[in-house]
Length: 458
Ligand code: UD1
Ligand code: CA
Image 1 (spheres, rainbow, N blue to C red):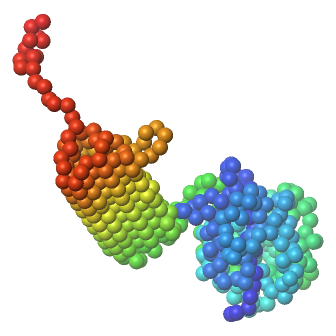
Image 2 (cartoon, rainbow, N blue to C red):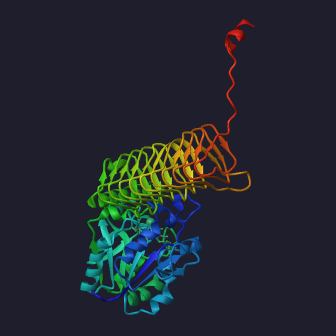
Image 3 (cartoon, rainbow, N blue to C red):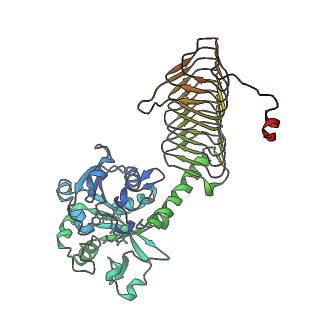
């Protein structure tokens, strides 16, 4: 079916029930804003153009999208859904003989597959309007679908009679219109209703009176149409997306031991044979390789892991890279721009920031490594601290291949430890150490014989 159609997403409203300083449609669900999810879904139907009606916080909304994906029309005041569509009048006039799909901006769970039958039916029946209805156990808050004298129309809940409120078939907020018929009906919509708004749904009554053909497709996928109006509905929608994502990664060969406590953002990629333990969170644009093991309470954001990487429990990794067969954790923290090279080991209570940690190097316990370049086969002893900050500026530390840094060392940056050099435990290193040398900088131990005995006698 190559017949082109336009798409219009209504997203100008604030979303008052969210009680947020941020417009509702920019709230994220598993790493994507509500509106981004909707745009992606609509793009899946391959419309000729996608328009978004913006108003409240319009600059923030427009910033989210590339100009080649969607175009924007501005509704200055939010006077209702019909008024929102009128904001697009000038673009609609250019395509009078086409159809337009109009959809509310608060339906982040809608999948393109669910909308396809609506498009097909609209074309088959050559309707002026075909809308998507759904039979809901709890129809509260929705417009109801009314049938009388062989005609079909939608009435808003606030304006419905008690008997009409008992109807369980609702308007989902998705419509396909013949543009010509839509434009002729829109100016006839009034705001003489309980909310004082111009309702798009009133077009159904107007068209019915004028003898226009109205059809509907009743969807089975009712769960996709719980409009997200409150924070609780946001949480419920996230749960649906979370389950979808977990189903998707498991189908690609990932083991998820406890789907109920695992959070994987929608854009995350994970290789086959990776095993994910309970309570793992993977966010943003993270990419996890094949055969990795992610133990409980691992939290990864916008990072890349190679293959066969092991992340032991309670480890936080942000904007970092971990290469094949490396092991990190438990209780490690990798801050942005950390690189852990192949087969390296980073152990408990080790923190890194802007640090490259070389192949097969080890830092097993209690260290801080910031702005540091560590080459291959380096051993960082327990409690090593890189003092990279002098109160004003950050300085760099370089530790060359095969060097051994003893426990409890402080490296005062900028400083360099040469190839295969040794630093004695407990040293404070302020000057470069030459390759192969041993540097020790601690005071000599003194011993006072029988000191405690003498003390007690006093
Ligand atoms: C709407 C429908 C209702 C349907 C329900 C499904 C109308 C009048 N009612 O009600 O029949 O059952 O959706 O979820 O359409 N918007 C604008 N400009 C405005 C007003 C709204 O762009 O002036 C946008 C909102 O940002 C939102 C969408 O239109 O994304 C729907 O508006 P909303 O107020 O949420 O409508 P509902 O009361 O949910
Ligand atoms: Ca709504």
